Length: 371
Image (cartoon, rainbow, N blue to C red):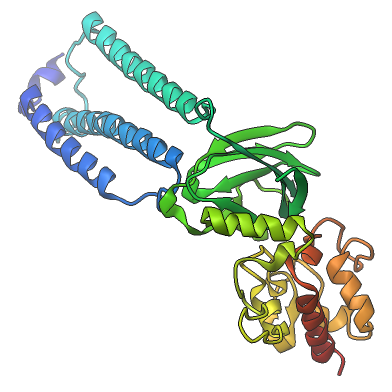
């Protein structure tokens, strides 16, 4: 007791509640303005995307003040109650819990959370609603498998499959999503919608591309699904109603479903019928149809690629005839190189590349590896 009495008196540096409130309000305003000004997402190209972006903004507005409140209280507490020189042996001042304060800091967060949950539930229910009675809804069955997506349509009484996704702008569509092997996740970032593709069950969601969304939109698998997961990317083509009708007529009649919407890397040019470029196909694939670049997974000295997901082509096909190489491309699981396993190479190159493109790729590989 004598030791405590001999210690120098503690200097009072009380930070008032008013100071904390002032700092908190200013920091909250700045944080909210910054959070709302950042472009967190790609363009909102579906009707549902606008509602999801609004939900995100509400969450930012609600969460920033909470973060600021906790941070300000902690910082002011550190400044006010820090130990000063000569106070090493002093006990802290006697304090007692405040029941009122405990009720407040329990009740207020609970109310905020319940409000956000309710709003999120309303938003989810809204974006999952079926179109109004009398509004036609297109149904597309999406099937995922390592490492590609395929799409099944029913148009004009005909059912057909395609390796590319085409949708008319401004028209609602329901995706029924399935998987042939492992869990995948069907995600179009520009639409803000995603859902797991689970073996044995069918999941679904609805989306309506905006009329202004005409163009190409990336399709991504958002669930780690194997060694080739990073390359399970394709393109959703949003086109006008007339262009969609022409495409469905062509594909349902047996046209090349993989022809895409134009000349991709290595593809035959629409005008002039230029011969496909095998090297470009190997290095860049075909973005229009979702054909993954071979060089992403394989090493090939002539192309300057060093991928290790698949075998080194300079070694494994150096003595194989063109017919065998073609079979490896269109039917990759028929024969697998030692040290590798089935199900890694996309099985749909026969759909995502035209016959001329496959032949050009084979010729390039033969020329590059047969020395």
